[in-house]
Length: 141
Image 1: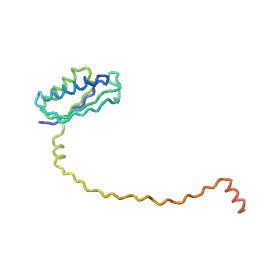
Image 2: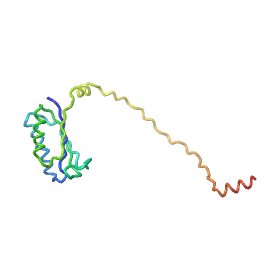
Image 3: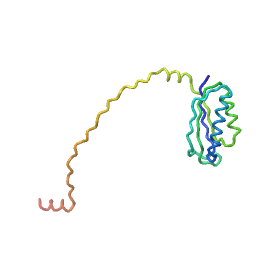
């Protein structure tokens, strides 16, 4: 089974209950067709980069799931059917990159933390006024 992630932007004017219902419907579609939901992240209401259907804000959420190739097409028809979906993007993780990422061992070396000693304060030099400089120059001359 492949690993997919879908990111959906819903109309921000929807009540929270309808947003939760839509997210639940998406996860149930995945489960009905033999998929397994890995994570659901609700990013919340955000400003859109550009207006979509004369709307400036949208509610973002993402679902990461495992499943066969037919599930993204079924989700796509679900998104197209719903007028509250402004945009969506579904993509498949590259299995070769996932394998290489999982096979790499984290090489976290402990980092020495040096305690930063406060620097010694330099004495503050007196700044002379222009009139004082003129007086000194007159005395020297």
